[in-house]
Image 1 (cartoon, rainbow, N blue to C red):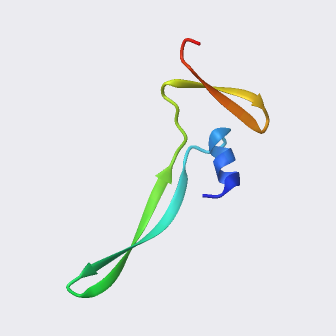
Image 2 (image 1 turned 90 degrees about the horizontal axis):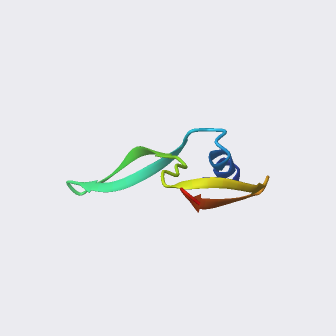
Length: 64
C-alpha cells in the first residue's frame, strides 16, 4: 500500500483498497502460486477521528 492510498483511506475518499498478493505453496512436490486479493479498509468503531490539520489526525474515545 502506498502512502497516498493510505491518506485516501483516512480522509474517506475511498472505502477500501485492493492489494494483489501471490501465495506460494507445495502440492505433490510441485510449487504452485495462487493469486490472492486482500481488501484493506480504515474503520474506527470505538474512536472518533479528530482532524488537527490537513496532514494530521488524532483519535479520541467516544464520550470524550
